[in-house]
Length: 177
Image (cartoon, rainbow, N blue to C red):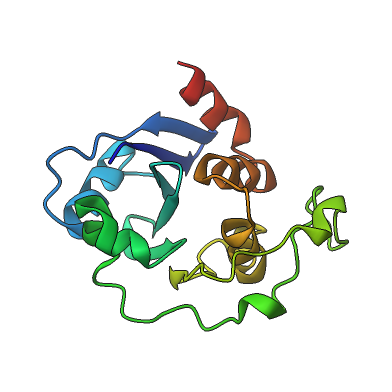
């Protein structure tokens, strides 16, 4: 399974992004340690792991502590070693009903965008903490809607979240490198 892992950290000078090598990682704590090592003094560290244009996992560390995890689909656990490593220990499934999720606004405002009629994948089974980006401007409902929207690739979700939070250009530069 091919994957792309972008570590995005917010430090004193703003957001920076770097590709993170997950080869040989033993478990989720090992991945968390690798994320901490990107910038040990970062107040906020995020990791976006995109796998096979199908799955997305997001990890968050605040001040190097309290690792929080969200996965776009529980099937990622069964489909790959990487998915099992990142999401197997996630005990609590997402509690929000996908039907009740409002489509995300294109400009980050509360208004519904032109893509309102795009269906949300009824087979999507997100897991973990969908509110891990809520304080950054991406509430749980918006994240779930982005991940479950038919036709959205993990890279599209990462790009949209990056634009909403303010690190979109950094991740795009990383992809283009």
